[in-house]
Length: 266
Image (cartoon, rainbow, N blue to C red; front, side, top):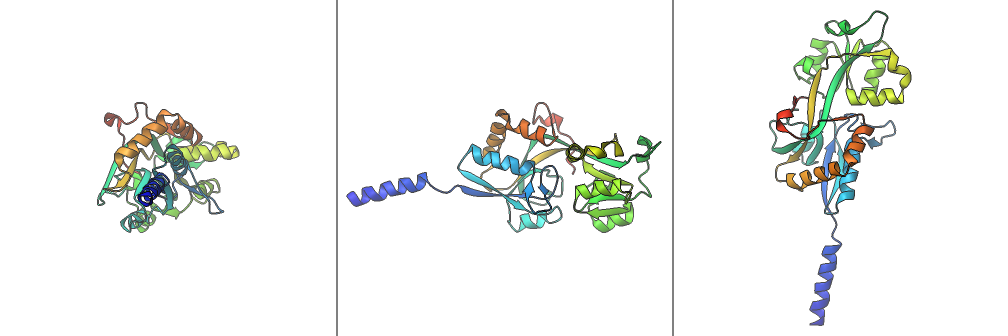
């Protein structure tokens, strides 16, 4: 009898100290959500939110898994990850078995050009015959959301890169006439490099507006209900607002009202 009591206690202790279930969260370079430094360190809002999720509970451990914008679908199909934050079902996910829910974060992609004497908003009216720097794997409204590199080069005189910072620098150095960057990243970049603020002009009309979603593989843990509860908790605590302000992101008042959903395009 004593033996069985010892075994029972051991089992209870083992459950109490069970390792959390790992949840693999994919992310590609998409500043300010995911960024990769020259030293190979990953950072950004996505990783900040995952850290908060891990602090808020102990049942699951959210682990960041790097991918690439052009490789994210293949890596998902290979089950390298099951979850992605700040994504959108309309960004090429139509053929995949995923569940999703929208969050309160608004995004906007803007055209930028080098400031010149006499150059104003009319400069953005005609995109033809202008070289434009674009990020590999992204979908842009002006190009009908076609992310094929050959198409963008041939039809839109695009220079394809893997760095938002490089795109800004190419505009400043006159290597291209235009670039498209996320508005939040541009604000972050100019906050770190205020000497460039007067050297760029930003188009008043954005390439696109969008809402960000959380995307989860159908049937994967921890499930949408658990993730919604975590999202509500991080929002109610004020942690989400703090992180969003830190990354120059905007929140839609009223959070997830379906009637206020914007374009679901990257």
